[in-house]
Image (cartoon, rainbow, N blue to C red; front, side, top):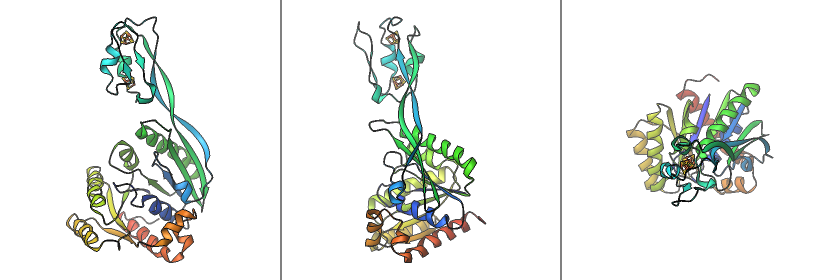
Length: 293
Ligand code: SF4
Ligand code: SF4
């Protein structure tokens, strides 16, 4: 069973929910947590996991052979990233950092002056705590291709899982609805959309649930800090009712959640009374997808 934890807006508590669900699932099932929020992975901090490097993630980039270059400028004109700068009668200049490896310049060159090499854009790490096997993707500082790193961390998780044989895989996605989020949602059985009672969170929740509907993946809403703003809580409730999306969990606004982050421990280890909330969410997910795990 693969469950993606997402939500649209950043900072709604996706990682808190993903790590807490992983810790609860791991009590009864072999569980893997994939931190696919590659621009800002933090599940290892919330679970006090010491990371171990598993592999590097590379992206193809072009390499110029100026002995073959006829200074036509075509490579620069096809580069949508503006990673190639061309000045008449000069050889093209390459800005490696903004290249996304689309290879259009290689195809466009009339004199085969451009070949392919690679650059490192990220790293995959592994670790384990609370019986949860953690796989982490991290985008290298200054790099742009986060979607590529998410795809690689997903591929490597599947590879690692062939040995581990986890029954539950939870994927903690990044914020938004772009390539990295799509790469996190693909192939999952259920989407947990974490939101909070604020106008921007509701706006982004609608976008991410539109995405879930597009990919025909069942979803449920978890409202974090539900008791923070009564009027916006009821707006989320009516949106969920109107669109027949179940609210599978409500998390109160309590200092224990801040302490959980500060002490780098799951909230259920700070105060066991929250166990019920996550057990209930797991029960509802299992009912939604008719899982007998
Ligand atoms: S591979 Fe694509 S992004 Fe990179 S320099 Fe060539 S055209 Fe530009
Ligand atoms: S397209 Fe090829 S030949 Fe033309 S400027 Fe670029 S590298 Fe040189």
